[in-house]
Image 1 (tube, one colour):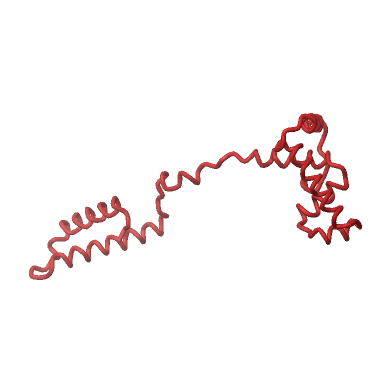
Image 2 (cartoon, helix red, strand yellow):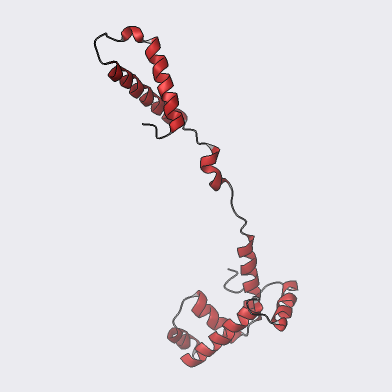
Length: 163
C-alpha cells in the first residue's frame, strides 16, 4: 500500500498497537487476519487523509538534486563575447550572419533583402563565420585575440544579440 518499506513498517506497528488496544472488539471464531487487514487499511486511509490535510513530508535526499543549480555565468560571458566579436565584423558580414544565423532566413531571401547575388551572400557568410571563430578563440589567431582584448575595454555595440 505505501510503496515505502519504512512507512510500511510504521503502518504494521500502528496496526498491531490498535489491534491490542481494541482486542475486546474482535469476535472469536472470525478470521483474525481479515480483522487485522481491516484495521491496517483503515489506519492507512487515515494517514493518507492526514497527509492531505497537513501536507506530506519529503525527505531531503529525494529533492537534493533540485536544491542546487550549476553556475550559468558562462553563457552570459559567451554572449557578451559574441556581441563584441560581432561588433568587430565589417557591416556586410555582420548583417548577413545575423540574417542567416539569428533570423534563420534562406540565402535567397537574404540576397533579395540585401540586394546582392546569392554567391556573394555565401562568400560573406563564410568569411564572417571564419572571422567569428577567430575572434571567439575557437581558431587560434593572435591578431583576433588582440582585437577582442581591445574591444573589452570599450563599451559593446548594440547588436541584435544584445537585445
